Amino acid sequence: MRNRDGRGALWRGFGANFCGVLVGNLTNDIAYHLVDEFIKRKVRSSPRKAWSVFVVAHQENARYSPADFAEDLTKEVLARTAGLTLAYPFQVVFLRVVSQFVWKERVYTGLSDSFLQIYRQEGIRGLYSGFVPFMVSEIGALVLVWIAAYAFRSVVTGDRIWLTIFRFAADYMMRTVLYPFKLVGRMMAISPAPLKIVSPPLLPKFAHWRDCFAYLKMQNSLMRGSNIFMRIVNVDKFATASGKPGSGADSSSSTFAESVASSLEKASRVGRRLPSEPVIAASIRAGGFSEHGKGARFSAFGGFRTSF
Image 1: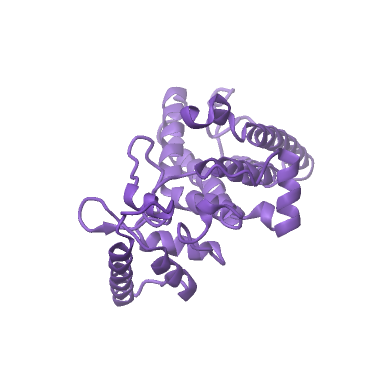
Image 2 (image 1 turned 135 degrees about the vertical axis):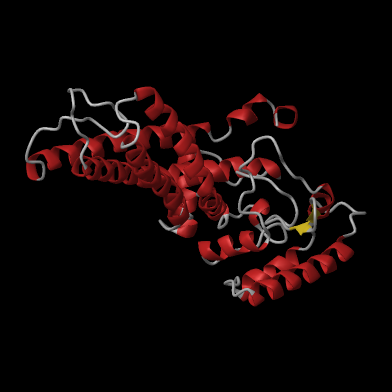
C-alpha cells in the first residue's frame, strides 16, 4: 500500500474510525451510567457488596449472586448496544473508504461527503447495512463471555489472576465462534456501494444478509480473514477481473459452474438450506475458483480472497 499509494494510504479511513470509536465509547459510558442510576432507584433494594463478575469482591465473604450477575449483564448489553448503534454508521463509512484502495477509486472522499452520499443514494438503511449480523457477533460474544465467566467464577472464587486470564481466553474463543457473523456484517456494509470490489463478477449483490451467509457457507469461506498470517490470493482470477489476458477464464468458469452444481446437489441430500436462486446464479456468473488443499474452495470474490 505504501509503495503504490504512499504513506497516507496507511491512514485511509482513520477519521471515520476515530470518530466511531469516540462516539461509541462516549455513548457506552453515558448509557451505562443512566441504566445504573435507574436500577439503583427503581430495582435494587440493598447496596451491592460484590462489584462485578470479573472483579474480586471488595468485602470479605461477599457473594456475587445471580441477581448481581443479571443486573451487570443487563447494564453491559444495553450500554454496548447503544454505543454500537450510534457508532455503526462511522464503521460503514470506514469500510467503504478503505475498500476503495483496491481499484484506486475515489467514490467516498471525506467523512461528511461520505455520509451525505450514502444517505442520498441508500437512505438511513445504507448507513446500517450489515448491522444485524454485526450486532449478533458483538452482543453475542459479550453475553457468552459473561455467562462463561460467571460459571468459571463459581469454581475459581476470589482469584483475580485466573479471572483475568479466563476473560481474555473466553473473549477470543467466543469472537472466533461468532466471526462468520462479523464477516457477513462487513461484507454487507460495503455490498450496496458503487465500488468495483463488491460488484459482479467479483462479488454478487445480496438482497439479505442471510443470502450472504449462505453464499459464504456454500463456498466454505465463513472464516475467511480470521487468520492474520495465512492468506489465499488467486492471482489468476484477479488478473481475469482486471481484464488481463491469458488467465483461462472460460475453462475456469465452466469448472466453477460444475463445482457449484455439485455443492448444491450435496447440500440438498443432507437437507441444508440452499441460497436463493439469484445468489446461485450470481455465483456461477462470477466464475473462477482457487485450489487449496483437497478439492476446490470457492471465494466470495470469485477466487480473490481478502478481508476488510
